[in-house]
Image 1 (cartoon, rainbow, N blue to C red):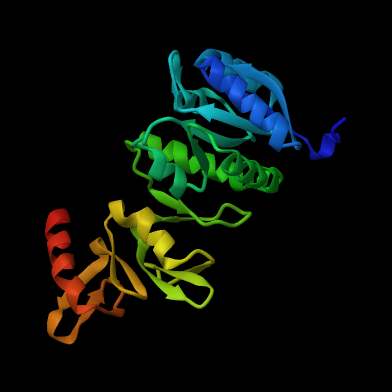
Image 2: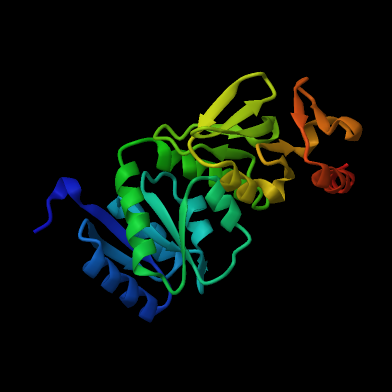
Length: 253
């Protein structure tokens, strides 16, 4: 018998029978902290189950034959559940899911990835992070899948507006976000992590230690190998990257 205070009451939302059985089997065999309390195969059934049961965790397929996992979230008045998305596709919203600090698994779901996502859900079940992540994603979906804010990986679910980030620089223990209002935020993730997540949102690695928001570049001094940013800061530039930056600047201006 599982201890109630350690159990993640879980709803599986998946429209394919074999996938539902496969997920249930993985959870039974490798995730002892999980108790599956319901399975749903359509948007409406998912809404009804989540509303009625108020689970701790939802494994949510993005593409359903009858509806969409995203529509499930839009139509729920409130859920404090952690969400783990599941998709067989390289979905357009995957980057928004990642920027908003949410987990996703691609089919076929691997045992190790599922375990890691469930552990993360267990760690975040009693803090504000899951709600902040969901709010961030719903905002992004309303904006055509383009996130307006970025969720920092802390328990409070603190976010920063992406258009207020001037640059991100590498630090000894992660990265530092420099914002337009002069404030900063420290983060444990590497600069390479943020480069990968933000490259499609017009951020550019101009130097091994600096990632800049192209929209915040006030001027380029190629002879001095430096950028002048909108907040008055000066950022060193690698010679090979200045020409690429100039091309990128023309694309967005």
